[in-house]
Each structure stands twice: as C-alpha cells, then as structure tokens.
Image 1 (cartoon, rainbow, N blue to C red):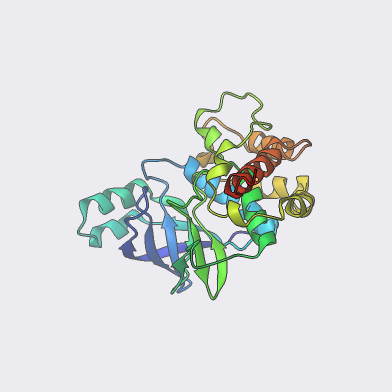
Image 2: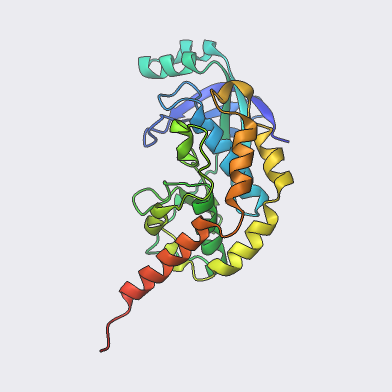
Length: 258
C-alpha cells in the first residue's frame, strides 16, 4: 500500500522542473519531492507518475518510495513568492511525492556504464509506459549510493492527454531511439522475458486501483489497466521497436569495412 503523509513545511522549490516541484518536510519527519496537483500540467501528470512508478517498482526497478501527500492551503501563508503561494493553494488536498534522496547526483552517460540487463530493463520499461522523458537532455535518472534510481515519470502515458477511447496498446514507441540508456541495452530480449512475466494482470489491477478518482478526469482506472494489459500482448510493438532502435544505433556506429 502507498502511505499517506501530511506536508508540514515547504523547504525549497526545484525550479528545474516544468511543474515547479518542491522539497517539503512531512509529519513523519521525512523529506520528499512534492509533485503538485494544481501545477499547470494538471493531475494527469500525477496519474502517470503513480502508475509508471509503481509498475516499475513491481517489475523490480529502483524507484524512490512514492507517497500520497496531504497539503494544507495554510502553508502558503509563510511563503513570500506569489507563484508558490498560488501553487500551494491550487493544490490543497491530496498530492503525490517521492522520497528525497540526499546527495544523489544526475546520471552521466559519459561517466557511468550501467550493467546491460538493468539498462535494457529501463529501456524496455520506458517503451512500455511510453515515457518520452529519459533522454540525454533530461535523464531523470539519479545515482544514489552508487545505484541508479528512476524518477519523474509524469511524461509517461502521454497518450492520455488526448485519449479518445481508441485502442493504443500496440502503438510503437519511436522515441525509444532517443533513450539515454539505449547504447547500453544489449540484453533487451532477456529483459523482455523477465519484465513481461513480472507485470501480471494482478499487478496492473493493483496499481491502477490506487489512482484517486478525482485525478482521472474523463478516463477510468479500467481503461488504464486494459491498455497496460493489452500492451504486453505479443507481438509487443514497443519491444520490437526498442530492438530495432538498438540494432540501428549499433549498425550506425560500426564502420563500413567494404
């Protein structure tokens, strides 16, 4: 189950994020990165953050703890920045937060070389959930205690923003060619076998059932669950696309010896 905590102190904004997330302290004395429901991108970003993050965890990938966070509009009274005041007031109620990892640094593909199965698993997972935001420009990968941590999945499930009810489960994910870990993903077939077995219909149902009703808008939990189940059905266009992108990347890097 996902814990629920209450924000007790706004510490500092993280202005590199488009939705202006913040480091906050909660009533369990923990520090968290708070994602605001009232940010410009709306609650669907929190839906993607919750579903993608918890499916990644169920698949065995490293993700900081995700919690629900209650936010009182009264916290805005002590903030001098009018933009932050407005954001807090617009987000009063239930929000989402991730455990803050002190001392973590952003992944650097020039300095780090992740193990092939882990890199392949992350590439596979991001293609599965259509996460467009794990690129050299914005890795959304932290290194904490020498281990990778996956963060910021708000850009996943991007189709939900214009979902018309059509079956999108076998849509290819062409943006996988831009994935920061693609050069290291030499074990995609092994990752496919492992992760497809771990992400069972029961896991999908359990994760989607946790989404708060008032975050869903016109969509339903069942619609998300059905999409995610169907996406795992062979031939898994997202996996075939990842394999094609990996082979294409390495073919272009191989000198022509003719």
